[in-house]
Length: 450
Image (tube, rainbow, N blue to C red; front, side, top):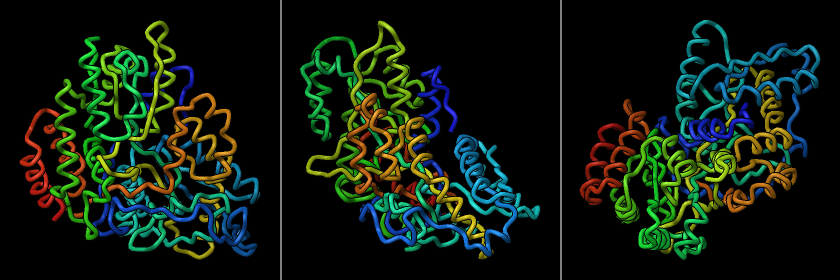
């Protein structure tokens, strides 16, 4: 991933587009078990080799070319992996197709290439795209034993579909609540109180009462982010917004409580749809005190604020709040690496390429650029200086074992559901009645996913 460190605004806005899209694409219903369920497991498990799988000598000699398909922002990572594979296997050609702007476009590109006789061995997909990748493009089963011993296997549940591991999470992010620490201090708010929605609302009231002319909270809903907000809140009570069969579950008590919070939060001022505008309001104009954003956008936002000169301020961050009495079970977003090759030797070499792309050095480099949650435990050890520079990221390191799957909507029009639900969340933030809005959202979701 290539991000220009010299232009912090570009960093922040680019990473928002990359990592905070709120699960806007669709998947096949019933894909990987209930979305919103915890995928916690042991960080390490039995593996065949501490350094990960290597193709057999026979297959390494037989395979002359590997083809990897990725979105454009993954290009630098892909090229680094390709260079390492060529070093390990002189004479091997690794073709990289990394010009698709987003994951749906990438899937269409893979289909077109197949029709033209150009197969793909390894593909990267959004976590909520894995069911569709499996159903329509034939993602192959993978084994956790092929990974490095240092890979954080608590994340593997995010890559399962129908009980089978079909994607190895490569970049993982969750939802954060970022705040202007100076504004909170002026209002007498302890940042530790922001762990629950009750604490956030109490803080918002204090900020409004302080009379400094700053809006308390901004919760962007565009590009599917509204769905992410609702899903994160409901999941904190252990109740996802999608049931075990992949059907929408938008009128549960947890969803209703989440909707009530969103309606109250929206009462503190106009909420932003576009994440870019939200960052400008927060970091440049100092118009908002608290902002929801992706963890993957956080370093860019911190650098943006730090580069604002006299208008800069102290920035804090915490995992997105839970409903009262809830626990941290953040909805994960991000991407996974899948094998599409069906030939045995191509699969072996493709698996080795995935292991190479997930080396601790590559994972650590990606975390420095995108502030994603490292998927490799050895990579975390390489990031001490990074986390010393950005201590705001440390609270998110402990979330790996608590992350839950994002919704993966099926049906012929399931791809529209994230945007439709986000529009309903925007109505909540605009003052719509929570009960009636969720009832309408449930009916709309049932129609789109049937």
